[in-house]
Image (cartoon, rainbow, N blue to C red; front, side, top):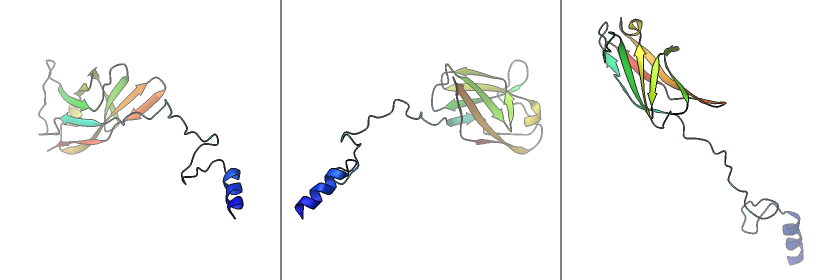
Length: 135
């Protein structure tokens, strides 16, 4: 009986004697250097709501502006802020993005979806969606 069990263990090189899986050469596979990056996330943003028709974070030219704090640096990437599918003019500094907001997005009450799209090389990712509310 013991000889039969030993023969089965020898025929199954992918199974370790402890019951876990090992690669055929009985060593653990090396971790990949292409491990997935941390998911892009809007950690905080402002304003999260405003009154209809009132510019917020007023800029010298009279336009309104968002600020978005991300969970990772966007330096060295192409990043864009999108508000209800429209790409906003923006500037990046490490984890902070500022974006001009056209008046049509705060002219009347409504709720708008806001997110960031980042591209580094051939890789593109989208952040979580957050809401901007106009009362």
